[in-house]
Length: 321
Ligand SMILES: Cc1cc2nc3c(=O)[nH]c(=O)nc-3n(C[C@H](O)[C@H](O)[C@H](O)COP(=O)(O)OP(=O)(O)OC[C@H]3O[C@@H](n4cnc5c(N)ncnc54)[C@H](O)[C@@H]3O)c2cc1C
Image (cartoon, rainbow, N blue to C red):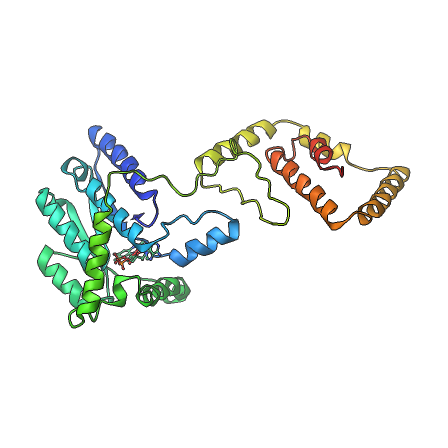
């Protein structure tokens, strides 16, 4: 399943195409991919906000609509559907009709399948079934004791119908309301007019191995984004850290270096902390902010040096000055 509201979808479809072509060339079977626009928009926003990541999806409905057509255009080429059959899933009748017409023009109708959700728009599902000759209906099935798992699925349906951006909000009135019909027609035409042959980059491209520490300007505060473990650059970066630390005793040495085992040394540490506290307290807010900002940059630079790293460097850079 690919979600066209992610800019990544076309590149992912291309990788699947390459993989399936190679598999068929070795005598294996092709695959099928279901194309949807994506049903978790609010969750995508929450996740992005919690981690300080860019939102993974397109920011407008029209961009998602255009991208859906980009993927259709690529996937429905005869040489491509031979390896990857396509499931066209959705309820937007303009897009369904577009896929059907395009597949007809290219002579690949036998390689696509239309898919809808049971109970969403029964009359339209029946009309589509009659036109295209068959329809795959999705029905969520769970054991009663797992009903809570189905709730998220069920909640997404009214949520989808509630947004005026979405076709479902007009689906039952299109026949009688020419304004709503024109709205959906114009959205379709606008998304088609934007169609190009670009392969968009993903919105999330964080790479801890190459990024420069970001300094925030005085008077503003911004968290550094969490490390996104799904991204290839970060995974390679993380693997390199594990390789470096694995089998090394640098972590144990660091712990030993910072273990206080006699009373006099502990007194000394406490006295230093108390004196530093007084010094810290005598500084103005702006001076403290400057120190904290330098500490943040040092921590950022030393991100790759956890247990096995050089803890002294962090303290050195952050020292009040
Ligand atoms: C058979 C079937 C299987 C499905 N399986 C999955 C699945 O596995 N995973 C999944 O995520 N969804 C799945 N869905 C749900 C599907 O993603 C939604 O039903 C679909 O997005 C609705 O698109 P549409 O073309 O029918 O309607 P439209 O109204 O044309 O499109 C609505 C969609 O546009 C996108 N959109 C709306 N506003 C914005 C915005 N501001 N910015 C960016 N994009 C926007 C969203 O994706 C929204 O759902 C499935 C649907 C069907 C029919």
